[in-house]
Image (tube, rainbow, N blue to C red):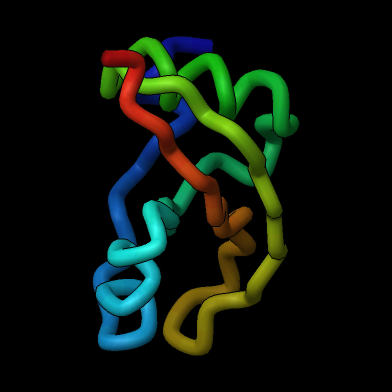
Length: 78
């Protein structure tokens, strides 16, 4: 899988905007991807080091697709 096949889009809400202050970011990702694939995709796409990944499966209320939601703490490589 390509990095951009795994990462679909960031999720931006009031709650996730507050999490950004703590260095945590939320992305909609492919449900077939595991944590290792997600970590590698985030690190190579954004040139950062991922410290921790938590995943959550959520069924969309508008579509019957299921996505994994990625909450990760990103630490700059600098």
